Image (cartoon, rainbow, N blue to C red; front, side, top):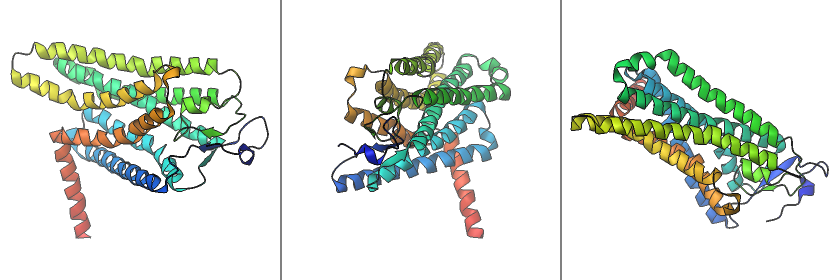
Length: 321
């Protein structure tokens, strides 16, 4: 659907406002999608907030694994909040616009939280590796200082890449059309609207993907190969089962996140289909964020016990009031 950009431009040189593509021309489909996304959004916010609260209030969970899980839950809250609210608004509003400044902000936070999650998942894999392959040195090598440094590096990498990519893309001119063929201000669909040569920007995106997505993923694979080798030589079946159950939740989250992200950003440009890109974007922004707290709570007895304790404590306080 074409958009009259004269309503969105201050001059002919650069678009000052953008419009998002319509989800569907059928109002009933938009309402159904709005309901589903809103439900996933609320489940994601509630689940991640409860996990963070349970970890912070339970001394038994003050360990490296749960420290990283609390960081991941906070990150997921920010990740979904950077995209989903605007997506919901576009589903029920005829005005599906966003200012240039709003698009810059949304893109920065999307990249920031996305890259941070890649690095944080790699740090969590390293923690699993140390716990299983080097248990005698685990307490010293995964001290509070080391965990804090790993988390700080993860958040710092996300911030640096987010600032760099966003600034590089929005230094370009956008001459029109001003309709982003996507749900939010993601890198490829916004870059497609830029004037002139964008080969340097595409190269910068590829380098960022290789360094900040592929590299953490390879570190995760290496960690799990070493873990698998260590598990296979364990003498007791109980030890093997305990070791595998320790990392199974993390491995499932890694598969969901990196699987959808790799298909989106590492495919050849010629194979990109707008419909498929939108479906994948919806998956890794809404579905995975909703599934992560469910995966960690259902497959972890300590988290389930802490959640029950937190919820019962809140309920008793509410009754006493």
